[in-house]
Length: 146
Image (cartoon, rainbow, N blue to C red; front, side):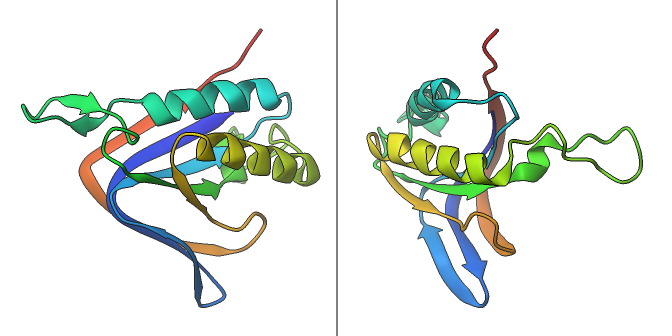
């Protein structure tokens, strides 16, 4: 499971001309699942994401989490995070199958909602993602259990 986390002052996802998810201060997160991912990784990364201290405190140090600032998450499913790029045309054989990935994305979304408000993109849709990066701060977070 891979998360690409961007600290934002605003972000939105549009599908077929309609905004399906939108946040102000918070984190826009691209979420990808690998072929061996389970709820175990989703549980772990939901907690890590909510507690990741990448917002400034009063001394301008990254010492606050999205929970601490009352921010929101915008979760965007992104199977292309598992692109295999050895050749010029990417292969996605290491990504979790769409039916299982949809279930795991929904599970991960609900786990994140235990910590903060969450908006989402639409799994399997062609999405237009807009964001105003704050910093910029972009972090890759992943966990693979052996």
